[in-house]
Image 1 (cartoon, rainbow over the protein chains, first blue to last red):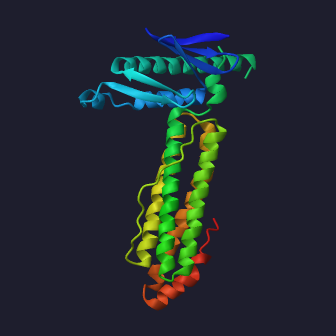
Image 2: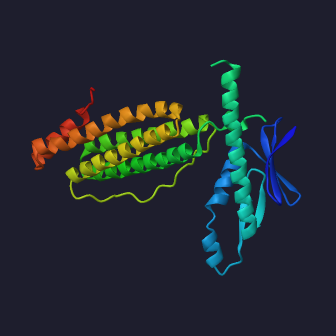
Image 3: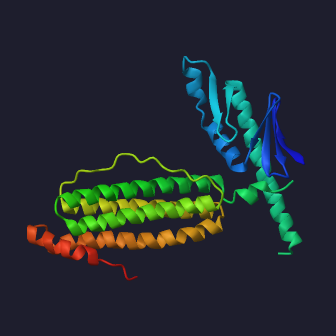
Length: 111
Length: 174
């Protein structure tokens, strides 16, 4: 069973309840991440220096390696911004879900 | 929706980052003490060399303790790269002065972590860090006492010989 966590115009992240992994869909391709790999991926995306990318004479693209699924992503500036929105949104929803679950646990266990 | 974030990632990102930074600091300290040990060893200060070899091992153990904690919490523990360390010193006293400076810097960063755990309301990591706070009290005490020996004995050849006789006996009984 999969539940959508967050989506943007061209990408989405779903949570697989059965395997505890996350499925990123981007341009009809699917990438599976364990939570720790998703966190690492987010760090990589956030660490990209967009100003440097814009100012350099090289094409405005970044190549990101995803060791967990042995794939490469070639992202344009626009796509990097979309991925930032997607990942920030995902982790905000996950944190919100954690907070709701914490409150529910309290009431269920009568703490 | 299952709470995968809580099940598999116990610590907040800020805490993971600051603990990884501390792992790097401890690794750097271990390397710095190794350089001090080498300086002492080649100049015939055998006991001081032993003192710093032991300190280097301790810093490495601190690094591993933090590393295992992150692994146990299913967080990303980063094996650090280590920058250059100081290999040249003027006198034995200067080596011990650097050692004390080092310990004070490590204490400061440990206290910063405790502050961050409080800010993030991470009680478990705060509890875990208590051991490091105590350890730093001991480390700073030993480094300070070593320097005080120079004040008491002086720095001529006989005094340095007496320093060598006493350096391994400094213990914290607190």
